[in-house]
Length: 296
Image 1 (cartoon, rainbow, N blue to C red):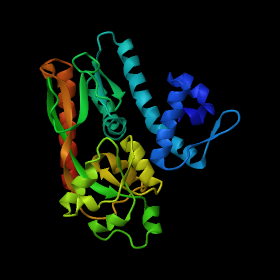
Image 2: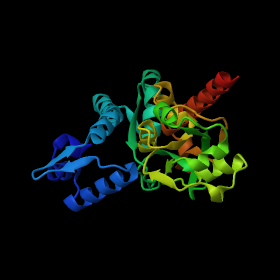
Image 3: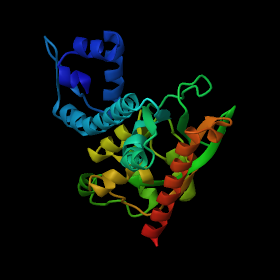
């Protein structure tokens, strides 16, 4: 996105604090995941392709929202010397689609506590103080931490309305996926086999899955009509609500993985971490109730 804005790989590398070769490699990996060039290399600088410009425009609001939330929290903390800050590490897609919409209400109810977000997929070292809390996807086994189940993962295929229009046969039953292009998260290759196994399908017969580094990239790729993605119900909902993705086939599967609230052992007993921890768990339970009412 920075390269598309600056129209220069050199300028983008300087802004991001990367070497030029490192930035070029990252762009190459991203283009390979998308399956299409995002930048055109010119004699002087670069120019985004039509797909690259659209992709950067789609990502811009999410990136801006993350920066704004952290800037607001830091400014509030500076303006209130007694205010305590709780740093939460979580993947950007979860931050944008689930946590950010809830933060204004939390700050209004808890003016003495600021929340600072670290939107990263990297596993931070909680013991070293890199964050006070983390929301991580897994089975809850992180040594030396207190990990509490936060949100279950409901998996279901999603695709763009345009993709359905281009495939008149559609998807009428789970085995129809064998003749489609499947998209999935590179860090969780087990999601498609897990869904297929629950539908009684032979997982060895699944076609190769084109993978993406983040869930946001995955859903954007599906919205651009590149294939059928495995959707996590809570996180893909904004794309569904906007009409950019649809659920083409019945069959929701609860994954064996879940989002967990992770913290150093004993941290929940300390304010303000305990306050934020309790609030996050209450918000997750409220979301569960709303989801059950929507289905009933």
